[in-house]
Amino acid sequence: MSLKSTGLHHRNLPLVLLQARERVLSHFRPILNANGITEQQWRIVRVLYATTSLEPREIVEACRISSPSMAGVLSRMQELGLVTRRRVNHDQRRVRVALTPRARAMAARMAPQIEATYSRIEQCMGNEFIARFQSTLDQLLATLPEYGSGEAGRDGSSKYEDAAANIVFDIV
Amino acid sequence: MSLKSTGLHHRNLPLVLLQARERVLSHFRPILNANGITEQQWRIVRVLYATTSLEPREIVEACRISSPSMAGVLSRMQELGLVTRRRVNHDQRRVRVALTPRARAMAARMAPQIEATYSRIEQCMGNEFIARFQSTLDQLLATLPEYGSGEAGRDGSSKYEDAAANIVFDIV
DNA sequence: ATCAATTTGCTAATCTATTAGCGAATTTCC
DNA sequence: GGAAATTCGCTAATAGATTAGCAAATTGAT
Image 1 (spheres, helix red, strand yellow):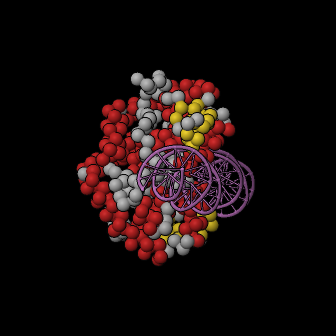
Image 2 (cartoon, helix red, strand yellow):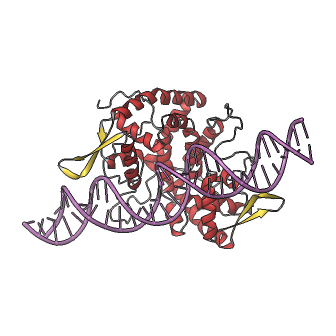
Image 3 (cartoon, chains in turn yellow, red, blue, brown):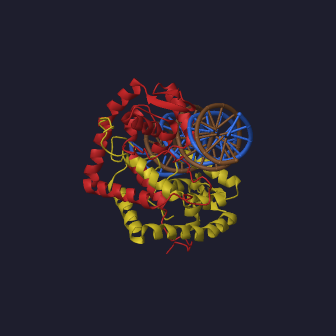
């Protein structure tokens, strides 16, 4: 009725995805705030906690944090005593990032709270809903190509330098 | 095998949602870049294009841009000649934001490109997949409460001051 | 009418995203 | 072996997100 003819008939899918992400994140944010770390820092802690050490480009790929951002984030995390960075011997360009014992202890302390939050979300939405939701998201990511992949661009590399084989520990 | 026992058994849902959003957005970003506007600016143009004018808190709600960010975004858009801001007469606190003819022309020029991109995405994923995906996201947003809603907080208002009845033009 | 509480838009400070690009180390090709 | 292309991590500049808070205008209660 009061809607003008805009020629835009589709809903804003990125916006809806943003809303959904924020809605979910709102349940975890208190845990992060209580431990004094940001979302991005937690993503990094999360993947490093599941391994032992990674190189920046691997973290960039796994955490979907752009390379320029990663520099500052790791720098701050180092000052906070959360990670250590040391050069790789046989390749002076590369760096190894690892969690400090302090950060590892923090992750261990946070893990049960994170898990409990997932349980509450599953209880609210239903376990199968979440399972189906996850597989739907997986299907989207498996089917819809990143725009520019297989394009005329001479390198074919994306924003996150998806060169390194998908190590992808996208397991919150 | 090589996975240590971290106590974190759930996948990182916010991260997967971030990936999905970025994947979808990558298809629209070229259009935005070609027109020299950012994602957030486009969200604002989009909702204002569908109406005539809105107040900042309504845009904040509809576009999921926080109030502090909105100040800077609108300020830049005003300098770019995309929007106008004028005080409401009977309430000197409030402001009315409207698109300039220039921005309206730009939106009209972008609309078919945006629509074509949605068509390509639907063609890739299947129309029903996208439809189901949308309704799944809607169900999540309808069922999972924002953390803190109905909590001890004395006002119950969220980050986006969801006071104003959902005008929500979440129609890309 | 007056004082308290709320609403609206805003600023400040810190952190992350995006885009562009750079230097050094390494690999590839000839 | 040496030049070209690539890889890796980084800096710079601008835009947004997050958290906290604040002044002015309005509303509500007394």
